[in-house]
Amino acid sequence: QKEVEQNSGPLSVPEGAIASLNCTYSDRGSQSFFWYRQYSGKSPELIMSIYSNGDKEDGRFTAQLNKASQYVSLLIRDSQPSDSATYLCAVSYTSGTYKYIFGTGTRLKVLA
Amino acid sequence: GAVVSQHPSRVICKSGTSVKIECRSLDFQATTMFWYRQFPKQSLMLMATSNEGSKATYEQGVEKDKFLINHASLTLSTLTVTSAHPEDSSFYICSALPAGTDIQYFGAGTRLSVL
Image (cartoon, rainbow over all chains, first blue to last red; front, side):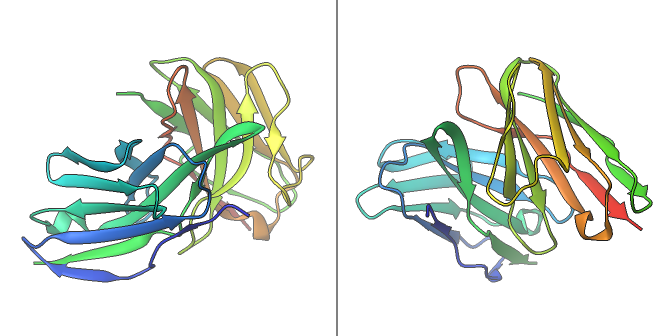
């Protein structure tokens, strides 16, 4: 059973702080990792993808991947109230067909 | 960026009726589309993978005769919920995979309420 685990939260951070979101996965063969943001009542929107060990930065967002530890994280710098949402970690794998496994998501609250 | 259109955004229907949801990739061709269901405060659950020109692959526990999927072209997949019941009320979301990439782009979702 392929699994992706996230702390459901809520994770509360003050405005301007760094929010750190974590995700672990069970399939060592996974190659692609994604972070999506989902506002309440809306569908997910892609924030970042990461494929190699290390850090990948895009604006205020940094994704970190450690395949040896089966761990992927997302850092949000200078958090804003508009960042308040549920952040979904997704891991791809191929078993006959290509698909994602989603974590349950971490709810982030940025306090003004 | 890749745009996926999903219609309708909301539908209310009576128990026993069928509902069709459309998912279109507007600016790219998608050989593969996915259908998810999300219940309140839960994560996305993959229902089925839809490949253009072939039968959909359903996840374990998803009734293929109840949730009919058609992927007739490289830009359109449809999900029909047949004989809907109140327990089918949920948020249904499609996604599409542009050819040559591994990033899924999501439609806006359809909120289905079965009375």
